[in-house]
Amino acid sequence: MGRLEDKVALITGGGGSIGAATARLFAEEGAKVVLADVDEDGLATVTDEIGAERAAYVVTDVTDSGQVREAVRIAIERFGGLDIAFANAGIFGDATPIVDYPEDVFDQVMAVNVKGSFLVAKHVLAVMRDGGSLIFNSSVVGLLSDAGIAGYATSKHAIVGLMRTAAREVAERGIRVNSLHPGPVDNQFQHRIEVIATGAPEERAAELFEERIPLARHAAPEEIARTVLFLASEDSSFVTATTLSVDGGLKG
Image 1: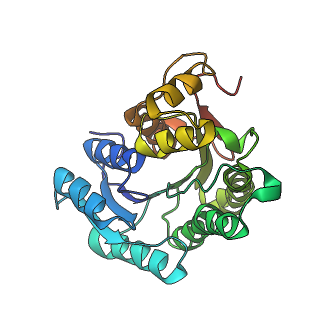
Image 2: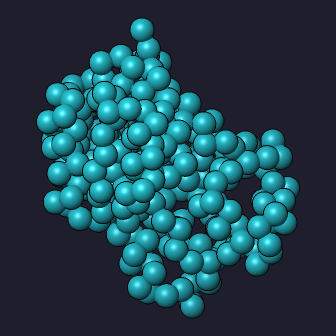
């Protein structure tokens, strides 16, 4: 039996590399998964790979309460309940000093990363089965920061406060709530950030970031997914209200 046998999971940002890798791994470990994202093509591709017996998707804007609630409803209607949620959807914004940071971009980043995570928590915790697990995808910059990333870093720090509050509120139901803090991952989301932050071509920008990582490389999406699996499974049965770094030593 897999570590998630008979469990049902909802994954936002399910069309992206980390969400997709997590969905595949969850399915391999026995879970049924519902993927939510604004990218219908990405959702359809991952769902087709896993198969209709174990996966479904719903196009979802996480800033819209009704759409998030509908994704939760579909998970319960299709697979009979909800045990795990991975609040993974997020955007970067801009790389600009605070005095020049566009207010509309800041608002958008906060809407997707913070309000979106809040709405996932709000709707999944209302119906999650006792003993479940809610995982927020923050970032290594949810534990530290750097110049020029006010929107992204602020939003990722905010997720930690949301996580710790939720963990306290649902502990009596045996539901664990934790946040994940990946360092640079080998995907287009990260490579775009690196180009914006450094102004260098993609390959050189990646090298500049790797020079700051003690393990001297980017993570594969599958490495992040394995850590999500740990937090979703009984392997982490006494872990809650915790910030878990998966950053190749960058934070240290």
